[in-house]
Image (cartoon, rainbow, N blue to C red; front, side):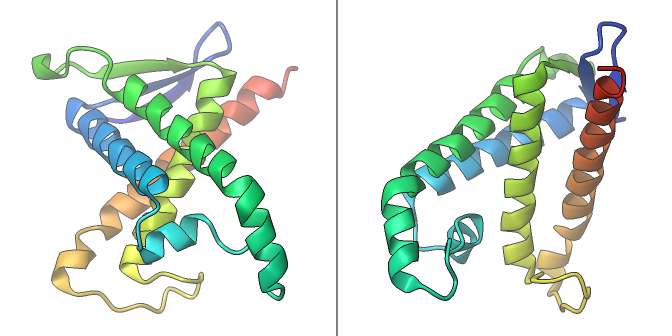
Length: 166
């Protein structure tokens, strides 16, 4: 069972089942590929929306100077998650414990946002009204989308509790 706790040292510890860790590592690899290969994919556009919706020239200029740095940041966050989720002996079936420092927790939260944006694009979720229809194959992604949202919220709560006394 997934758990997010704050250690006595004030760090965030994430405990995952081996299947959850493998899934997160796999998703991280997919996101890294998506952001570094700049494929023609609506999910890519969801990760990198126009900086200026009403000014195509300014958006193009922003993209020219900033896109590579933004993509590297997203890829770096994905690599941080891959590294953490791939740690431990997944074959043994023991829970995977990942202790996150300040940099790593922000990378995890950034990455979870990116994964949820890609899933939202795949699911056709474009606002909070909940009005979308899915075929049976895509409907299997909804529990993953929800679980990732729960995990992200748990990390935010844990991070907030570490900074309350600071």
